[in-house]
Image (cartoon, rainbow, N blue to C red):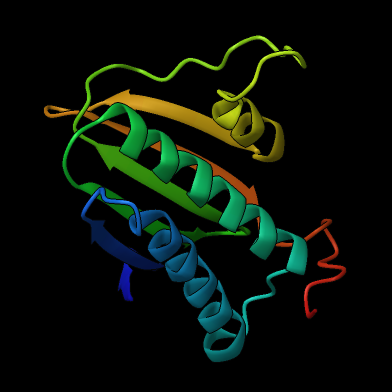
Length: 146
């Protein structure tokens, strides 16, 4: 974990193999738990659970659609947790229209539904997907200590 430009962050290079999804979720839980305990940043239980879900979906997509390593970057930016996932594929993700009869391929649809914002940017190599979620359940910070 480091502090860059006033932001608290944690980053990891994942190998892109099967265990990397669980490793990424574990990193997210550890990061947000440290933010609560060491930095007294209010993080709701809902934010913790949704961050795990978003990390899982984005890393799963990176593993599925790109070869090689995956970079995961988590940071606190104001009252948000920012999740960035880089992979080597230049193909931009596209959220599909909702279709309850479709089996699978709902990851980006889910991420978009639970995040305040989601954006994908092409990098010199590959792409970076950034998702931002509120740390508290509401503006007052209710439910931030569970």
